[in-house]
Amino acid sequence: MAKLADVLAAVDALGFDPARVKHVARRLSEAGKIPSGGPSRAPDLSEDDVLRLLMAVTTSPKLRQAETSVETYGALTPEGAHIADDAPDSIPRNAADAIAVEVEMARRGHVEARRSTIEFVRSWPEIVIESRDGSARFRQLGANAALWATGGHRTATTIPVAAVADILDALFG
Image 1 (spheres, rainbow, N blue to C red):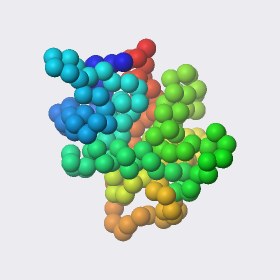
Image 2 (cartoon, one colour):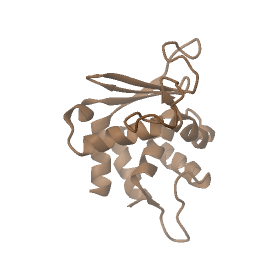
Image 3 (tube, helix red, strand yellow):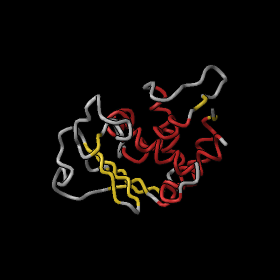
Image 4 (tube, rainbow, N blue to C red):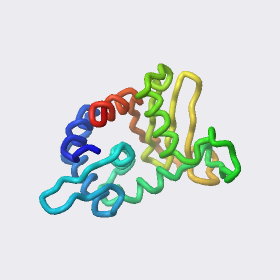
């Protein structure tokens, strides 16, 4: 477990506005998406909590959207497909699980995982994990992953998986 202040300092390496990250963390805490401390006690965050915070910061253009974006983006499925309950365990069920697996592989030294990136699209709910072997695109259930969800610009934030893995290594060893 890591203290919120340590997480905020570590996430600062990604170049996000520290004040905004702190406000997003407060919104997630108030919504029950990450732990909220107690009186005179800072919250202890797990690795999954740090990943939820990063997801909220990268996908929420407005602070009030932070708590809903964690649910929406975390539940995205591969290519927008319905994953059957009896599908093999090697198929990621949602974007949150896929990101956690990719980051964990990078933390264990898997070279290809460390070279991959995670692209968080803010224009519509979409996450793309890019690696040398190809890409894994996560969209809302039933969405056509080959098409843009709406007209207009596609706005996204791309983060190297190695940077996230290094942050988690610094926080959790």
